[in-house]
Length: 402
Image (cartoon, rainbow, N blue to C red; front, top):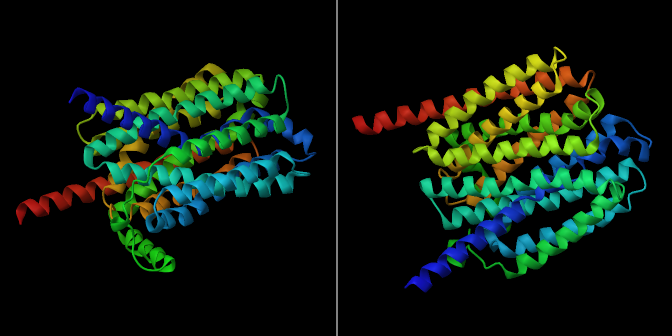
């Protein structure tokens, strides 16, 4: 009996580790080369906005890819689409290494983002296959914590790698990392049984997007998540230039600041488990994100000391860690039948917002444009979280009366 319990525990730990690894594609693909972005201006003889565009197209690929891999994984299972996405990731990484100008590099970044989408959407879908309710929320919060290690390690590793190599060396590391994940994926078992897969043709599978999009509560949570990610991507895209060009930190010191903020996300995601209900965690996170973003907007426009700016970025990531796992669980619990499609809608919406916001922070004065972006996104996150929670309370009251 004890041996059986031990085996289950080990299986759950492997699932947690594996899902964290494949869903970490997004932060690894974006964060590892962040310290190299200012130097890539010179390497490609191009502007800051063109280098930032490599983030934008990567986010766009991550979003569009989820619209494909989500329904395909609902139709054919989780494992085969994941393996296909990993092969595509390896090929696009080779393309990035051998890019001949900024335009070819951005094209391969688009493909790389598209390939990385498979891991992100399938990780959420596997979690929904295995868990439900508050257990799903707790699992997603643990997943977010393990995922959060990627933004801590990636920029630190990127900053350290630049001591010995250039931006191409960073993408060689990504290539080998993708190969290791591919080998790990071969060991993963299928979690979506054939009888639970969507029936009909693959084109018919895409029709399941319609009822998901028509679910108002689901879409409110999705929009709250998207604006949270808009806040995050504003910070992500602007932080290399704010810390390295405005405050003149070294690439390694910038990586340290980024790692500290990524740890804040882990702290926030773990605090979610202290709440009895996901709704309370989402509400607390949305209020905190709005307050910290408002203060940060003021700091960025008043030439505040770097320690103050860094401290407030840390607070923002803590509250992002509150919002994301709680609202993701609330949304996915509403759409269990088409979990892949629902995960795809969430992912596409998040990275679409990221691709739209990222180039905006590069326009004009970077501190001013960043302050506007993070404040506006935090306001909209707060609005949609309270909109969704208000509908939930009203529906519960109506059901009690009936």
